[in-house]
Amino acid sequence: MIPMVDLKRQYQSLKTEIDEAVADVLAQTQFILGPNVSALEKDVAAYHGLPHAIGVANGTDALLLALRACGVGPGDEVITTPFTFIATAEVVALVGARPVFVDIHPGNFNIDPAKIEAAVTPKTRAIIPVHLFGHPADVNPILDIARRHSLRVIEDCAQAFGATYSGKPVGAFGDAGCFSFFPSKNLGCYGDGGMIVTAADDIAEKVRMLRNHGSRERYYHADVGYNSRLDEIQAAILRVKLKRIDAMNEARRQNAQRYRQAIRRDDVIAPSEIPGCRHVYHQYTLRMRNRQKAADALTQAGIASAVYYPVPLHRQEAFLKLYPASPALAISETCAQEVLSLPMFPELTPDEIGRIADVINHAG
Ligand SMILES: *Cc1c(COP(=O)(O)O)cnc(C)c1O
Image 1: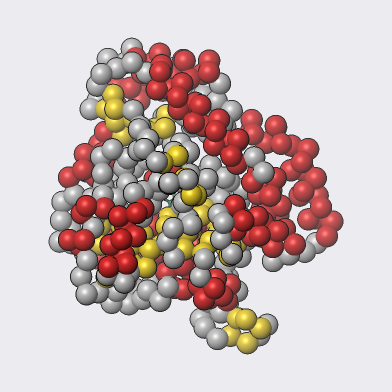
Image 2: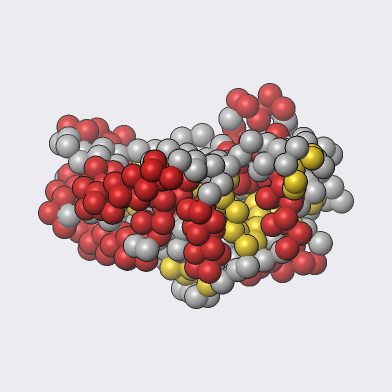
């Protein structure tokens, strides 16, 4: 059996260090907002060349708190992509604003900057580009549009820790960058976790307050906030993995290269890397007309595959209920029908990639 992601292999290779890190937390018994969270925040901020990183409970909360800290609320509109995990737009609805979906570019599955400006209205307050599957969204034109219309940019980096655009890591471009450390993400912990990075002192201050019940000083609450903190055990595990994130991303890139050479079918579109971008292949996602045949053949051979995502967000029941007159977004809808993601993780072997490619090549 080849799974989509094999977390056991990674744990085995890091076991001694991770077990020690967790044992230290248990011995110190400081479980919430202690030295591991502070140290991780410092290291993640430095990784991005930014002054601030704030640990939160998960990636969804990272987006939610970033929106709140940027002042997005009832009556506002937020432009984002429909081809993403629901959390990206869910948080917009949760703060009382409306997600406005703009179609994607077929080359990299990310929001198409050329289509954003037509969606800007006097109510637009922010843009949330997603660096989907580990490939950076086209950040420069997005920042240009945001500057011209005084919009905030909140990057959804949940699938792209360490991906770069013009040599700079994603998350360092907008007003805030939001990360998820869900176990299967390319930087994952052993439970839920998330982080916000920002250059802005006021956003950092606000997020720190919001994650802890809107309080700066204990039992004095300036705002209605959340209980949304990264815990010490998760932070300790992440500190072990953060040291290796570049090597792990590099291993994913090598695996992608092997897939690219081994899959030989004219009717399959392999993921590409736009010049100036460094893709970290959180997912290796093909496009093919008859994906079901390939998926069935993989299942037969004991190989996992997955469809990320089968329904674009403007077609999800949750949003159709709120906004029934949702316009068609052709490229997202076609991609939703044609994408197929293959197993991808740093420890995947060349032999396994060969076997997976063989099945795809012969699946008709
Ligand atoms: C995983 C993910 C999230 C949410 O992260 P959680 O930690 O699961 O809350 C948000 N956006 C995208 C694109 C994701 O893949």
